Length: 379
Image 1 (tube, rainbow, N blue to C red):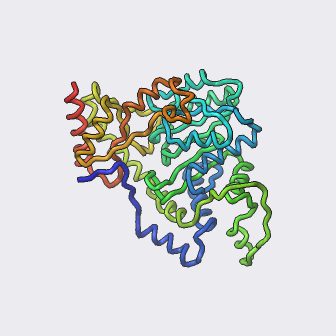
Image 2: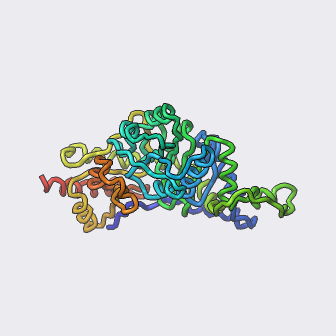
Image 3: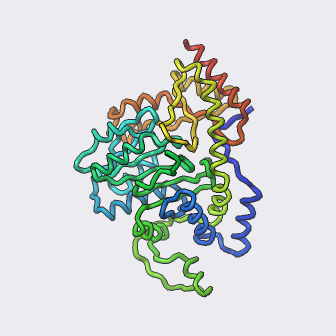
């Protein structure tokens, strides 16, 4: 038996059909299916703009860069972020010469609003909120803090595809929302992402910056009249961050199943929790915020002797993960070490158990029993 942390599910025949459309008309790049996927994503989320990119990392960078340009942020200005995240979250801040200031995490492993307020200075320009595992944490409180202090809000929604808060996809209150469709996410492609700005001007700038600063993409230049409009201008020193129609073709299939797939993940997570509830003295569960229906990208528990338990699971053919190591333990962010005690403690205890659509109830019970037996042996 081998149970991996992530095993994505693709509707292969449907994906191949969508991809075949691209190959038959001879268009695999930007435009065509990317336009279709952006339209579907806007319809799904209710967000006003959406631009399809090659990764969520690219989206985070563009979100920071364009907000910096819009509001004339200066090098050395600060963005409050979390130390419990993948490093791309905080790298996006550094890429623009800004400083990540780390606020601690709460019981949901998301930013703690109280510590955010403590970390605000005259140089604070924005908050970067990460929806860990698909959770909304105390999102509404953070929205209020940003409004109170006139701060921009960026949502790193890499885990949040399909998450709802009080029945609504969160993000209408944010300046930018960035999603990931990387290979193991809830809506998987080989690798891609989506950045959703609230502002039409920033969306337009984003489309240019993601295509080397060019003011018109090739597909849009060919659609009008069918002949190739070869003249374009270059407005910015941009990047090659755009995605392509092959990835969008996979996304167009995945979005049709996203809510149902998330419900299946929620059922597996509920079964884990039911198994662990009687052992709460040794196994700590991450609570669900009120009103949040999470995408359930991750199922995270807190345990003592985490690294030893991880080895025991590996010995039984089970391969969990850790999401994430406290970023202040990395040398480049060590200037903030000791400023987020809850994150530091959580980083030593958190364990992400396998969770995928291919898992069975029997496998969830098998993993649960090993965790329970090991933690019980420590009592």
